[in-house]
Amino acid sequence: MTKKLVGTGFLLVLLVLAMGTPSGSVNVPLKAVRVGDGFAGALPDNAWRENMAAYDFVLREGLSLRLLAGFDQDHLYLGFSVKDPFLNFADDFSLDFRGSDHLRLIFWPLGPTPVTLYLLPSSKIKEPLLNISGVSWRQTSVTVRSSSMPDGYFLTVAISLANLGVAPGHREIPVQIGVHEVGGTGEAKTYWLFGTGPQDYATLVLSR
Image 1: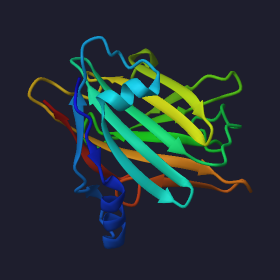
Image 2 (image 1 turned 45 degrees about the horizontal axis):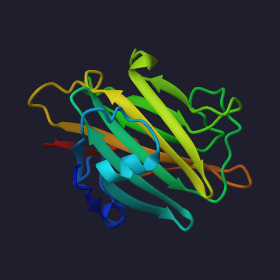
Image 3 (image 1 turned 90 degrees about the vertical axis):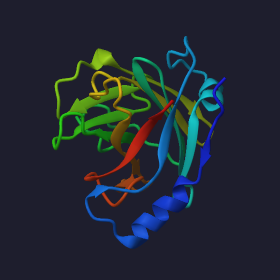
Image 4 (image 1 turned 60 degrees about the horizontal axis):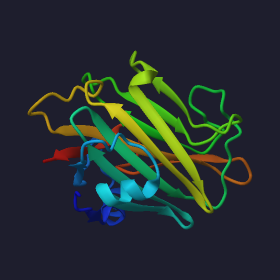
């Protein structure tokens, strides 16, 4: 069993925001750890907690996220435990789910043009949904699962390393993560984990 790592990502993020980091790489150390054969990204969430590196982020009072990161020979696995006392999943039809609480993952697999994954934890059909912009990835190469919690949701995504341009010897993946929240009065805001916006990113290192 891989030893779980616990980071203090939220402290680093607060420091980055205070410094006003410009566009580009944000010096936040993130590692994904190798998971055992047969993991396959399945729920329940305790399997993720026992096998993944973990990083905690406090975005505002009452809104927080725990990021879990792992990989195997073929896939990158990211898990998100989001605590949010008010959830709204009404918008499951727009391309960016702007009217719903959801997650945004941004990668740069082909150079300067980013790829954005919009991950909706729940919908009218009670299933997570996925939209992809910026590249012609097949949705079948990305698997999304989710489950509800009393004060939020737990969502996981498995992404083919081939999609991300990860080849043998290449161990670093630039990534930005946004938590899009819709408040009780309908106002929407995206909280970015690294830097100040979608143009910033942290480097996720695939740790041997």
